[in-house]
Image (tube, rainbow, N blue to C red; front, side, top):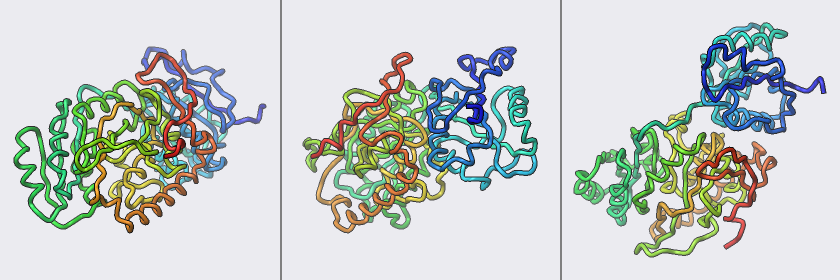
Length: 435
């Protein structure tokens, strides 16, 4: 229909910048009729510029979320989304903070405010032409971060230490990693000197930084101090009673190299008892897919939060970029108003999974220890954690992404990538099967 909103798209030539690029790839027939509930008719990472009229600001909030998710999916690294801010009086570049709710939603889904459009200058003229009917509009511009991995980036294994009982085995598993570019950061929240002594006797084996907390920070504060002191591009939490397989960091990091737009890498984890013996899977630890798989992040969060079980993994299970949480500073480990007290992992995975894709590896790359002195086994903590999960669920369900893809389904692609295989829906294997 003629009154349908339209997008103007600029499709690049595999990311190359060639003479005459704009005239060759910006065409009048690139105006695409668009219903905001629909998926875009473009492959991942195929579009240089998306420009649209002021219809976005008039959409329901949940529709804006879906629209911006699709923009992020199809944009090339460095690609730009441009749209006018409604109700503005002068056509000038200005801060977008507080203009509408769109900047907040864009940040949630992994789009960043763009001070300068990172494409050919002539594209600006084309965008101005598109918006000519509204000469006084202030333009909102967002860009997609380049998530490529160059060389062997630095990885920080951070250990929020408190209980010395299993700490030596935990630290030894970090020291035994096959990946070389690693630092180990230990933040000691214990009252005694056992953790300090065990660290000192091993610190010559690999780069280890030991930090004693001057006052007790408790779990959330200690996680925050670990995160803030990580110097690596990537962060790997390791709780003081858990273990990493020797190839854990190398395997998880490789997913970022091979699967573009990955924000979170995880794997199956093995439950073990206090003696290191293997324990059977529970609903939350069953493998969620039948083979190594790339998963659209929001569908994995849907599955996790619909049943309130951490199917993604405990803090020791995953790897992610530090930069992807820096927008939360200084109050880390939260999602859209939910602070997730006692569920630092689930609230953090929710924030990350809305920004991009996950890769799940079937091999057990970490071990999660079950023992009587865990904080999770304290009834008071269990009650608080349950309340936090309900708060996190409410914050997530408010986005209504479960209405886009039901929580028993995952949107997946093969890993490693297999040519141009498109996204498809498949049932999740875990959580919904029962105990």
